[in-house]
Length: 483
Image (cartoon, rainbow, N blue to C red):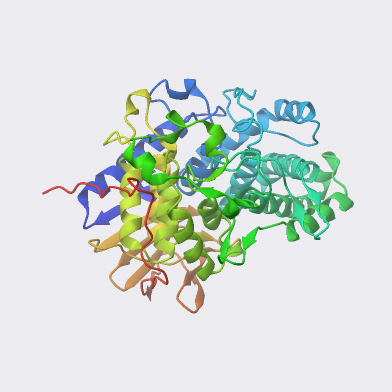
């Protein structure tokens, strides 16, 4: 595991220690799950009563798929073993397909709070995304046919049942709750819509690759074509006056929360001090939502749109969830705010080492720790999944002199070594790995052959907006440094 997964940071020993601490606990939580859920607290405490959430697929499994793919496959197989319960849940909601639970241990929905539970259908798109990602990164054809295909098909059917064709020609998904739990039961949540579109596209592609297995699931060509066609027409709300995407339709028209008062009256986290009735009506973001969409649906946004969106939502996001900092780190790095990205990385991986939320006694925040890996690899490494190859955009934050990390891709070990101005890619294995490196104006595509390192130059991203500010009292605290 460590040969492929270790992250080596030169220039910040505190973060080096914290990232390895994070990797250890994520591995411990998932390596021997063996077709059982990976709880939000792993094996470290009683928080959340041992329940698993959408955190698993969107934060923990990217790390495990890239470093311990057997463990990731087992976690996805567990989801398939609960399919009958997910189908039953869908029928209860008068929907087709599978509606996986928001909060569970063995497959039943254990959340009684419907705006944050039942309405948070994005958990299904997250499960589908994890299954499709696992197939792309491992090229495991048997896994795709036997395990991923049923997940993709039944979740695609859910979106077909929930969404509708609008008079504007777009495919809309209304009445849902996105990752931001301070904004509930809304229409066209951008994150949900974009991942639902990915779900529909992946289901169609997998069904075409495995026609006999798809036919056994009662998939026909008309259904496949409808999935593809609706994915192409997914609604993505945009405020043309402000020049930013909306977290959901009409979000930017709402009144803004009084952050100065909340800071003055020591009201954070808001969920412990303010009624949800007030939160739901205001522009205030509990955790990265539109920003999360920019990470996992990167191609849906231009670089300029990402920069403007990040600046806009940064001033509204209070990070009352441990899931937020790592995603903000990823996008802060992508749009050129490297010092801010490093601070968010520190918050993600030191969430429990510094007990930042004063609740680590209930167990560690496993998704935040896994998110720390994402902040390093997808943030400063710039890793993005282009389908046919891995893409990188290397950078180093202030104070770092070198960053090294590895991922397992298509059965090979790819090592990335970033130093000032250059990056070296090395493959251990028996086959070449196709990758791409993104630059300011161009994308270079090439193969890295086993034991034949490839070195390329890189330049830091030039920020096109001033360093964004956060709500009063909610700026990330720079991680302490050893003397």
